Length: 349
Image 1 (spheres, helix red, strand yellow):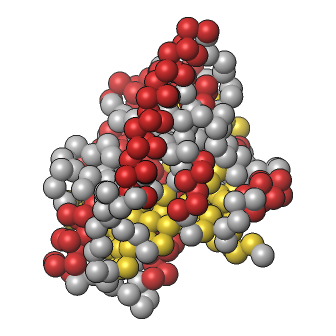
Image 2 (cartoon, rainbow, N blue to C red):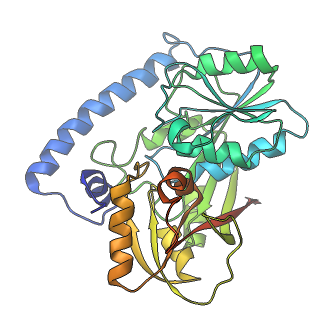
């Protein structure tokens, strides 16, 4: 019920599925066109024909070479909170998947608090960020990063901006670029979109100032570290571990008793979440596409699966929480729980 062409493409990107001969030919042609566009863009910036706008404030980009699911959001939150102790910080996100238009800047949070009550309105990731950053960190969404940064400077006197994503967007000059890489998935089949997961050629790592390898419970992490060191950039490891499980309906922490649960999520790479959930539950996993917008019928379908398997508990992610609260508020016979993660970032010598 939850899988469509987007998931099928991910399976091709990460070598879980081979495309048919005709699809392979079509993807190769499309990749060639995409590569021409990206290489032309980067060439024009390299010779100075296209210009990156200097914003007059410190701009730090946390980005990635591949399509979603790497794990940038916890890094963005951690970095912004750390910087806010000595700087006036704003986080700028594109606001993908929001109901509100991102053509103009939207203030998701300022030093007075959240401006939205529901992540479905402003986007799941910006809402999650806004809930977790410190009080004086501003969160703004806009597809035009320049406009968002200008608003942050004029309205809030910001002197440091953390870009959530934006490695491929070169309209704003970055003072520092941090590249996040999934330790398990890495660059998949190392092909550009749409044949592979890469939004930029691997050679563009040269533009990054440092790399953060996001540990996805990787049993071959040492191999990933050796692989990442080959790019000759300062290297850190980001580790995410379960912090607590709480009930979405009540907000109360959950006391675990090894029960069975339906584990579901709509994130880019779902397997790490399912692995975490297995530490606490005997699960039936259900995967939705990244940024999927849940409906009442989806909740009914999930409850049907639970009923068929005599299960009354669900477990999901904090990113999904923002899109579910309104949909489940009148459900009392089932417990919808949320797994919260903690983040640790460590430099590698």
